[in-house]
Length: 402
Ligand code: AMP
Image (cartoon, rainbow, N blue to C red; front, side):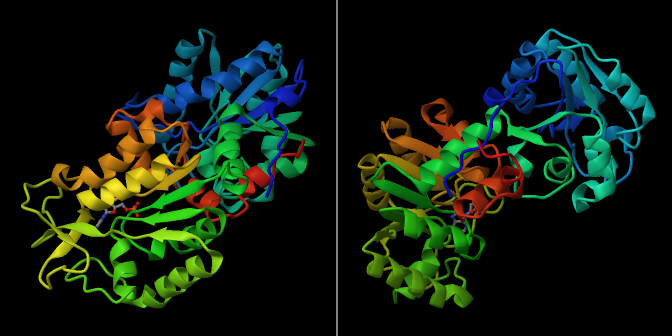
């Protein structure tokens, strides 16, 4: 792929109207923002554009208003909090249709370095259908477009893709740039050895990720629920463990592919077993550890065992680049989190470039307090998986090349 996109460092925005697609999709409770990480993460790009003398027009979606104004999903609280965080007024230009004559007039009246925030882009039904009318409305406000919303990069919507058809200069912000550098370029042109670690519940959710990473990496490590389908494909008994019988052929294909490409594909050698799935998920549970060639018929495998954890941690330590997506076991339960913790710890301790691909593994790493030990933790679940599948993300592709 070789992604080399124009960034906010490559454009001159002095006196220009700059439309910035941010990810302000923050959790709200009774009108209050309960986690402002996404706002904080957006500040560097906004500050850069303000410092360069741009007229900064911010936009984002929030939740799923399904194409009509929903007062509880208004971006009004975001404007208030952003103003505080920036120490500068962020003027909220509310319109039930996001862009209308009053919004246009407010934008025309802006001075260099001022900031406005538009209303929730998903108040417009066209947004998620990439309809031309709304793309044109958004584009009519601006001379330059900057996309800093990675979480929606795998979707082609008006505010991240459609709008770029009507604006010549389209760049990525610092957040997007970091995701591209790590998930895109580090995976496409990794410093070797490159170890990929995949876990999570189902093989079916990660078919393309497994296949793509197998081609790119030197060692592919499989854990979590998906490992048992691989073990069964190798002819082992896996008892009542989570298995997708429709994917046995696929797993055999991947095992053969690894062999023909000369790649190492590691599967668990031992496993935590229990009589039943914990209910509730964090309930107290009795587990035993057995080798994977001796799993009794009436139990399920719920985590990698200690021998496996050690092998996986060692493999991670020999790497120069590690990508990890998906927990090694039912990590929501402390007894079954040991394998996931062991892998997280190994990644925290290595000097390799460590990339955590969104979703549950990102949450696990942060919860365990290893967040600042990783080179990159992706902010996008779906978008980061599609990157690992080697797919071109519409929101990234729409930005100008350098
Ligand atoms: P995913 O969303 O695909 O990343 O999967 C994450 C989920 O996989 C978590 O909720 C884990 O509890 C679950 N999981 C991990 N290992 C197992 C396992 N051995 N059996 C069943 N579920 C698992």
